[in-house]
Length: 75
Image 1 (cartoon, rainbow, N blue to C red):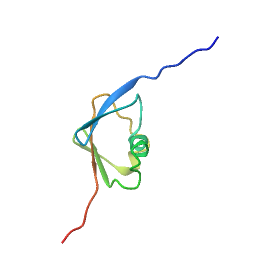
Image 2: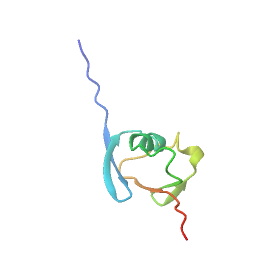
Image 3: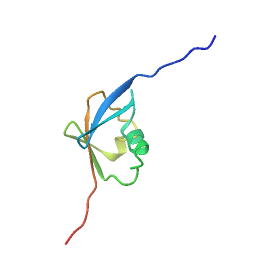
Image 4: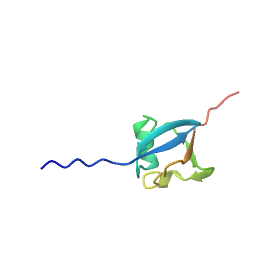
């Protein structure tokens, strides 16, 4: 007997754009899937800053609004 396990999916709004991810995904896994690891300097979930040392363990929830920021120097 073959058993198929279907994972639940959830919507996350990233910088204003809706994206679908597996349930229980961490912030770092989102960055990896989007090829942004090492490029993002700050992240806020639902207007709350998440420290970088928590990105590996911080799980997102359906409907979360994620803002990813990179600092650009200028003159």
